[in-house]
Image (spheres, rainbow, N blue to C red):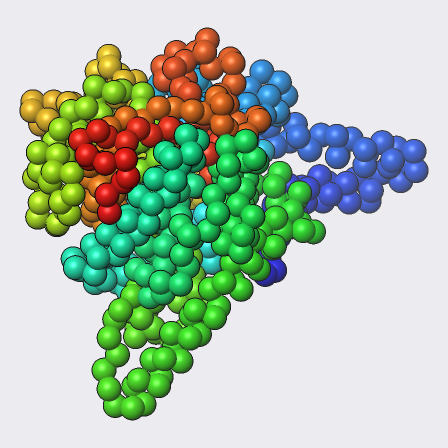
Length: 592
């Protein structure tokens, strides 16, 4: 798929950057007649280009300060690099986004600046970075009309996500949400039947791993589980059966785009899907002119998009053809899946494909991540594991199946999930763009946004670990903070916890994710009484946390896995655990 959008943007950017010196050169060539002096005039013009724009930037900043004071506000403090053109800052930001611990680059830069919100100006593109939940309250909710995904979001994601719900703005975004909301607003018995069916398969997989004594990559396992359930929920098909495919052994696993590589037909699609996310995330870590120039000839998303479209195209067309046949017969078409729901709402095959792709990210990656990181935390904190398992067994025994209503009674389970979402948010970084001048209210005084196109990038992970919000134990896994008086404090200031976004664009599948994760954890803890982290012995080479993390503050120092972000959070090289069969099951086999 050829994407002209970012290429056109780059051409405009280069024209705007170099037109002033070129115009000046032309004027000087008319005035200066001598050949040698004309040559020097041309050379001086191009050499002076960066100085011209630096001067322009300083004058613009001065004007913004004056305008901010007139409005009783202050400009967002600017972080500068130590080298000309902020080249060191550009490299630091890119490395922190692509390779650093989640949220750490935000904390590092903002701590150095002594603020929770600051501005980067990289190659003339202004970006606000923040960990201030008050700023996010305005951007996502009270000041929602003043911000959008914007041109920058489309530039980075358009060739992968198309015009789906994650990249759309304005009326198009409202249309996407209107299409999806009715389907996600319902509670279906069929969802729990699907959860039960694929959880039984998952337990069989665990049984084989426990019998062999080998660790298992739970990230891969849960990704397959959510892929299979998404197959029924989104596509109306039970033919994916990825849990039935061979699992890589610990001794043979190799690094994939996110986690480990899987050598199957399913693996080919998933690797394209994951590589597309990584390509998009890399673009977030670089100024637009950098990656747009690098990909001007060859779009990094071309091959990934081709594989994904080849998977989605037949599904979308088959659903639309089925709708036409059913309606032609005069019958009513049942909505057996989200794909059926889309087909009944539109005849646009591209719209159907884009919406499915966007929903797949939400249905597969986020819930798989929640389950994976929750199991990791339970392995790291055995006391929490013991208390949670006691709650599960008290409610359901070793074999009882949970229901919608019964899951709501498990208060500690919800606390565990919330605490997991706090420490490892599924989408640890997000962006918006200003639609024009506006003022953001904060507790330190209003901040002035002077013009359209300023990117606002926030770290959910950094917000979730602020000690002034969460206490001195902010880096610790403490589910009890979600119960009693501490829970009331969180409820009184809800924008300090935004794992599912917030405001008009809050995640439509939030409750679905809670239901699915809760169901799976109940079934696992009925038969498993202990998780042990096996990352050091089982993960592929190059996937363990860097040694330098042990010298850092916060969770980096104790982490046994290497969390990374590529649109959604994942563990580099997979997330390998050993599991112990509970003696209370009364058998050497896992009950189904």
